[in-house]
Amino acid sequence: MKKTHIIGLVLIAVAIGIILITTGDASTYVGFDEAERIAQNNPNQKVHVVGVLKKDAQGKIVGMHFDPAVDANRLEFIVQDSLGRENQVIYPAPKPQDFERSEKIVLVGSMQSNKVFYCDKILLKCPSKYQEGKISADSTATYEAKKQL
Image (cartoon, rainbow, N blue to C red; front, side, top):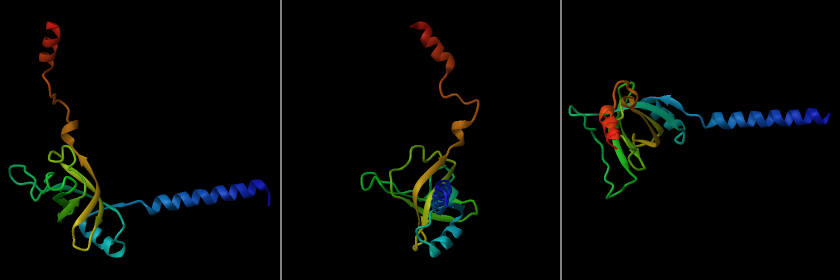
C-alpha cells in the first residue's frame, strides 16, 4: 500500500472514533417516565427533562428546600414535565440566580432507583428577560440627571 492510502485510512479511523465518542455521550429530551425507563437499563445515562416549577396561587415554588446555612450545595424542588408528571428533583449545587422567576427549566441528569431525579445541570428559560417594551429604568429620569451634571 502507498503511504497516502495508509494515512487516509488512519484519518478515517480517527474520524469514526471521534463520531462514536461524541454520540455515545449525547443525551435525549424525555419526560420523567422515560427517564425512569432509561435509568433501569443504564443508570448512568444522562437525559434532558423540560418542565416547569410547581407553583402555588401566589407564585411561590412548591416543595423547594434550600437552606444555605445547613448545606449551600443542595437544592430540592418539584418539577412538572411536559407530559404532566410531577417529580422530586435534587440539584447538588447552589441555587441558580433567578431560579424563582424562571418559567421553564431544562434539567440534565438521571433518575435514581428511589424515583428522585438527580440533575447535574439546570438551564433556565426566562422569557421575561426578552419581552419587548419593558424598560427597567426611566429613560427620561436618566436623561434629566445627566443634564444636571
